[in-house]
Image 1 (cartoon, rainbow, N blue to C red):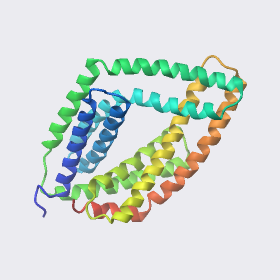
Image 2: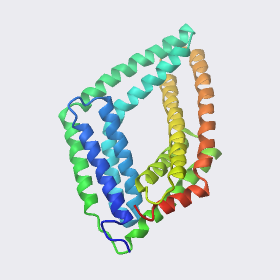
Image 3: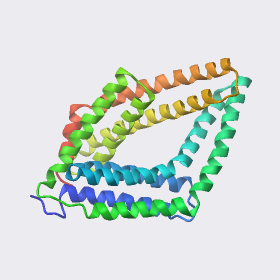
Length: 288
């Protein structure tokens, strides 16, 4: 058996604590801008992926700390979502020539800009920042103290098998019925799988691991874009003002764009969730 300090479990534990620490550091930056929020959210996602690798050790502990990190990340989501949606609207406006459609898009842009200012004012107040700092500090301390049973070395292997199986199921459900919710879930599973391999490192062949990283990123990016356009579509349709025909035209355009993104994403996901990916993950979980 590997020594406690060199085991795969301890390697993952250190990675989780490191990513939490990086998130806290990003949020302490004096500027506290979009880059800081992006960096914090990125590290919290990686920390949560690491927690999934430790899940077989302590299901209750995993549920508790995963919830803490998820709640902290959600405090940062609004300003990040606003920025992304404004970027998507800019893309639509750049390609839209019809005045009536542009007017509807411009009205939504104004609404989102106002929301973004409100969200930033709320986030920069002391209360949410203090809450996030406390939550992340508590999570790091608890993960550091997680009990490591004698058979702990098996945990990462069990976890990657579970991640892989969940990903394949999410992909199958998305193919059968590609609802926004199912596609978003498939995206999260792909990201978790790629981040798990990134954390594990271990004995994974660098070239093969690089392919998995790219495929996971491709699935995540494509379905992320699809999700963004789904939110824009929902916001446009929910607006009380605007001609129904104008909305219908914009919806058709968005649905066409989303169909292309989904097709590419599901093709990349097919390659990601091959049996060879599971073998690579299991090998990576053997040792740091």
